[in-house]
Amino acid sequence: MKTQHVLLVTSMTAFLGACSTIQHYEKAEQPTTTPLTAGVGDVVLRVNRQHDLPNIAGKADLFGRKTDEGFSEIRYMGVQADGAIAFARQDVTIRSNETTMTRTGAIPLPTSHTTYARGQIGGYRYSGVATSTGSTWVPTAGATTTVLPSGVIPIRLEAGQPQTILVGKYEIHVKKATPSSITYFITK
Image (tube, rainbow, N blue to C red; front, side):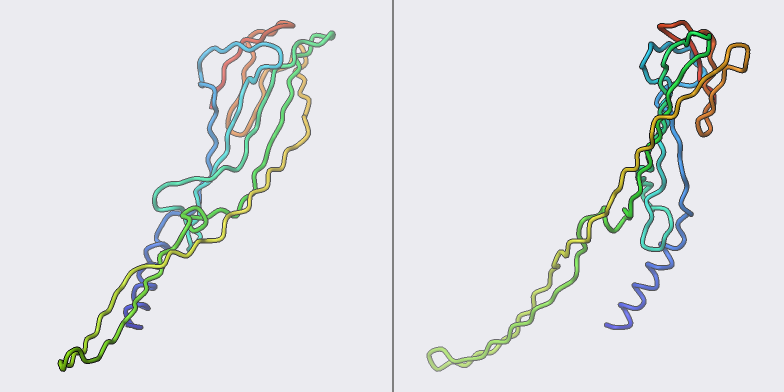
């Protein structure tokens, strides 16, 4: 029995270790290369960040599950008196120790119980053995998550300067700005 257990653990470790390394992902909520319009206070671009859920070997989850890392958000704030285009950026970072083990919820542990019986009924002797097997579900420790919001960062695009804002791997290209709205498109 001990040899089977060691073989199982060794096989699982090799299997999980063969998974790919943890990757990080950024995805914009707004479409790219499509003309867009936003009003004052509207979100111009929101980029959500995630990474692969780590397994017990520190590699990417075999099933492709992911966990949040936070987001960056750019809002249009209008045109200032000097003609500069104003935006506000806010970044939120999420720190978590979530893994495939904390997300799964419970781990089945095999159990076995053997009962021995011997006795006499009406002059007849009897004896027997009964073994039952099953699983006991042991809950895993939950993950801890911390949300770290940043302050609002003002962004100004001066008149006559390039009208582009970089957020991760996305760029916001301003085509036209008025005091009440902006026309723009996003590229990756």
